[in-house]
Image (cartoon, rainbow, N blue to C red; front, top):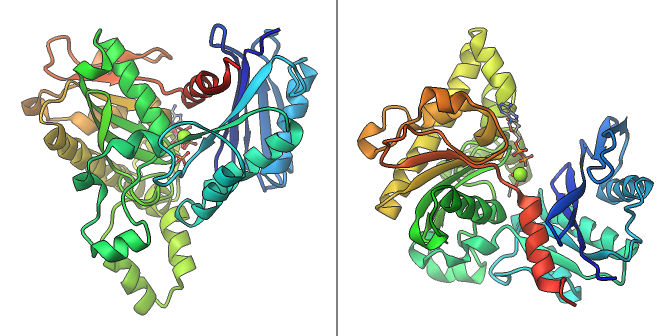
Length: 402
Ligand SMILES: Nc1ncnc2c1ncn2[C@@H]1O[C@H](COP(=O)(O)OP(=O)(O)O)[C@@H](O)[C@H]1O
Ligand SMILES: CC(=O)OP(=O)(O)O
Ligand SMILES: [Mg+2]
């Protein structure tokens, strides 16, 4: 029997998204999510797609990512899809920070694990969870290849002019301080899918991708290669996010330390976990913010306006970086679902060839679709991301043929 299945683990700071796929037809056998890991009310939702069975949900304390993964393995086993299956070819892992070392998917060995661990200070919310995911999977299936697929890989094509900060070169190089960029698997997948939607090859088009989830980033993709992206050394730079500030004057940090008497760790927590939308209005979920705006809530309205203002600045910046833009693609939880965000992001930009059609923008769906008027100079599109499918494809391409 040839092993054609790949299990993909996308471990976030407090969640694990997973999919089991059969790569002979890229079909999903099972999908699921464990969220609020570490809390008393952790939730697991598992959907056995292959058997057509009902989704199963479970709420209770799941202490850490190790326990979460073991719970996932138990759920899979209930459907006869357990990790002991001889049909499993590999386990693919999203790893957020790969530094400059990793430009492509990599089979995990001790040296790879050590490098992911070394990068924890520049991805403190993500790399520890990714490491636990890999180690637990290794313990469950020591014989299987574990493949790391890095968020940073797609951005390694950025030119030095975009990747370097304007700080002392020796200091920057000594500490490997440069802009790495994240969500690369999504930016790669969505930019390719956007080209396909336009009936073109990736080489033929320039695309601005707006990945707007809880974490959010923009990228400028020229002919299939990333030339700029909004996240930097860490996933804190750039857009306003659910809980992260994005861009600010670095002197804010000195000021908080000197005048606000906050410790570096307190400032880190403030900017990564208590800022962005949640810091501005107390909610990080765009659905809740829209609901409050509809009720006339001024604080929620201002938070939305700050979010949109920053997003528009990046659209303008990447228009200038690319020179010619063929498409702007919205993706991830907010980008795929929040029609108001899409409309506000390109409002009054007809002079740049950008517009959305109100009717098309209001249509919901899971398929890539155009939302710009038919005669628009620049296509505006909603292109659902699928990081798990992309990770599975890259994992299988690396190990599947053994
Ligand atoms: N129907 C919706 N309308 C507006 N926003 C939504 C909707 N569904 C999800 N979101 C937004 O998407 C976010 C989650 O996006 P997602 O891409 O899943 O994030 P992450 O991968 O960072 O956890 C939520 O916090 C919420 O703001
Ligand atoms: C890198 C990053 O911000 O990822 P996420 O959006 O999953 O938090
Ligand atoms: Mg995400």
